[in-house]
Image (cartoon, rainbow, N blue to C red; front, side, top):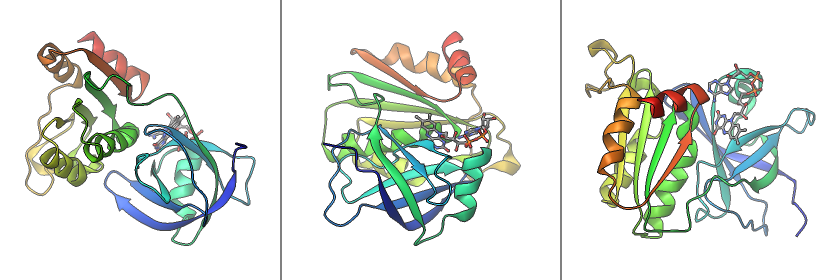
Length: 223
Ligand SMILES: Cc1cc2nc3c(=O)[nH]c(=O)nc-3n(C[C@H](O)[C@H](O)[C@H](O)COP(=O)(O)OP(=O)(O)OC[C@H]3O[C@@H](n4cnc5c(N)ncnc54)[C@H](O)[C@@H]3O)c2cc1C
């Protein structure tokens, strides 16, 4: 099937924590997309077709009728989307592609390492594993500077309750009592140490998926 590059409507804009917004993009009436959880779409503004950027889907393949992307206000296009896109705005969308997917082997334990806005595709993974009631176990190890940067915390906690195979672990590298979020204490263990503690407990086969800057990834696995 030819790629359907369509101008779609952003029907909701959700302010998340961490200077980040989620854009809920409605599919055109009668359109269906076949894609995998973890893939990314490429978007551009109708009036600026020369500037295209990729965004991981923060929704999953079982969420039908819409795409969600979650964009940090950083860099030229990240700032632009956060600034100009309102409910009813149009975005041109190049359909999902990408190989950052859940492994076919459902008996693997997934260790998902993320920093900042790198956690976006993992919301799709947590949703997918829960909706499909898969036996896969998954742990997200998520590093942010302060608790007010933890994206999707409420949903990750809710999915953790719904699906006992899932764990969401956060480390805040610059947590202080003053920077606690709604009174919640947060651990400031370096991400590398979290990774080194979790990996030996994974007894079944393991798949490690990372979505973060290269330096964060390197430091996590040098620990
Ligand atoms: C496959 C893929 C998936 C992506 N998924 C997401 C996503 O889910 N959410 C998202 O916000 N971005 C995501 N990005 C990054 C996105 O495509 C843009 O690069 C980003 O919005 C910055 O805009 P820009 O490229 O115009 O920045 P530029 O003006 O070109 O500047 C780039 C600068 O911004 C910094 N930067 C870029 N992105 C970030 C970020 N997210 N956090 C902190 N610093 C950043 C870079 O280090 C660099 O210094 C993804 C990129 C790829 C390739």
